[in-house]
Picture 1 (cartoon, rainbow, N blue to C red):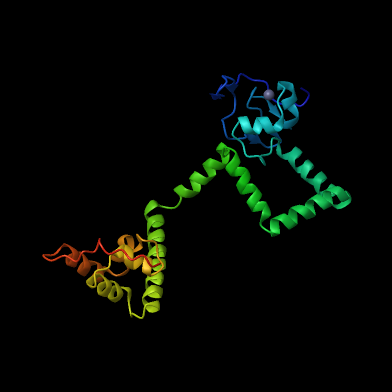
Picture 2: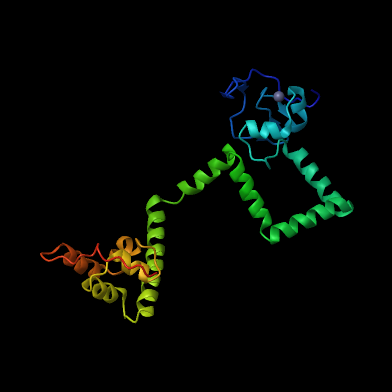
Length: 237
Ligand SMILES: [Zn+2]
């Protein structure tokens, strides 16, 4: 190994499922300036990618086995920069590369690239490195802020639906519509269906969008002479 930089006693920091010891942490590529560390032997190389042949491994297998993203560089900074520069030069000179780049750009602009990436991610286990990134992002948003954001947005959406349904049926608000129909013997499922909603919509959401009406109806159906709200289910949709 001509480009081997350091020879030292190296600590095993993990093991692969097949028992292979790891000298660099799973899911992380350790790059220190011009060199990167090989997970399999702990050696430092300008290009771990090129060195992998010594272990009989390919770059793709290596990234996959070590939990690295497919785009993760396996090289020290110098090598990576040199490669990127060479690729830039090729891009302007080589027509095949240029065509490939154009197709890539077209796919990206039409959203196909995102779709392809998403389906690739669905088809394979998420690399450890990306999983950690996602978890870090989620952790940076407090659960409460997340829940509040979701609730506010979804209640606003539900209110829009409620207003639309009430107006379409000729009422000022959904509460009035529901009170009148329940008094006439309709079930919440029936009113939901009649309004073009999922049969459980009012059962789930009435208290959120029309709390006063929900309270009145709860009393009406559980009072001394309850409306048989569960009997008459409208068959119209
Ligand atoms: Zn190695």
